[in-house]
Length: 396
Image (cartoon, rainbow, N blue to C red; front, side):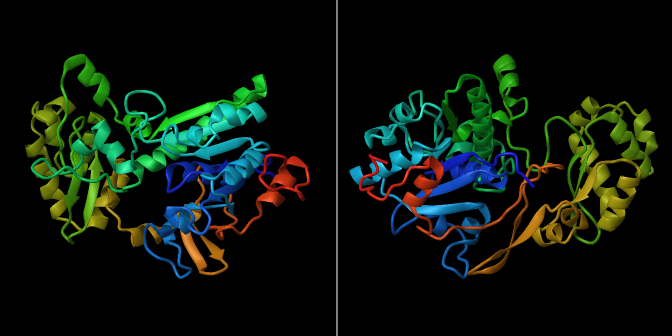
């Protein structure tokens, strides 16, 4: 079966997560991805997280998909030359160096596209390539703090918290980066020219802050930490059942609350002006949460979920990772898959997203042996030009 991006040649010169994640997405759907790594050292992602039996980390294995690795020292004239020869036949270059670094090495975008006008370069950086912070380094957690998300995360009286994954901003930047590459490729189909795709780590986080930005700009009203609550709807929180398990109930409109009230045996609440509308419930948030919390506390979690689902009330268990892995819904959609790794054996990882019904992506390999592929062989395969006499890469 042909995958949508077969024939797309990608050089992944990025490290850690955002850029490599974008390249992995492209690779899952058929792109030919070559990862460029520092000789003898490799991507620092190989050492970030929990160590796997092969000496790399499980995080590296999970997120490095369908790639081969070559070793090039971009900081040397010889390495820069070989890199230019490799990129000359590529469709896409992914990098996440601090703005100006590649230009200082003589391999900036304008220089590279003199030889390859169709080149699309995805540049992921802390703060983007323009503006007063363009040359400032950034990481995912700082990006969350920069946008205000960290300020909103956690309990009202406690320290600002973590959103759940220290790599959230990286993953979002990677997704938007992959989207940007595809849009640029579509544009290239019409113009014949590639372009620079500029993604800052904070971009994706800022894009998902619901109405926070327009409300503040229009009214000057900001938000503070609310723990498990949301500002826009009540009841919309976590509640503890009689068996100690937590579950989430999320009534985003009056119709859903009407269903919940009926399940609770409290249809009278719908005739009470204090609770009949969402705005009224927001004003009495604590009272509503006590009513719902007391009802949940009198039942086991499974019973609450069954009653709510039967009445079309959005409700779900707060699952641990093992409970997620064991759920039949996850298996039915290949949301989690197990891939055999030659040195580690079976490795369980998140599946391919999105799920294309007719031309799905898939995972062939996890991780990549450092320097396991030959730069010259890849240049020959991509360009059709033999490189037997290649020394610096300039004449390839």
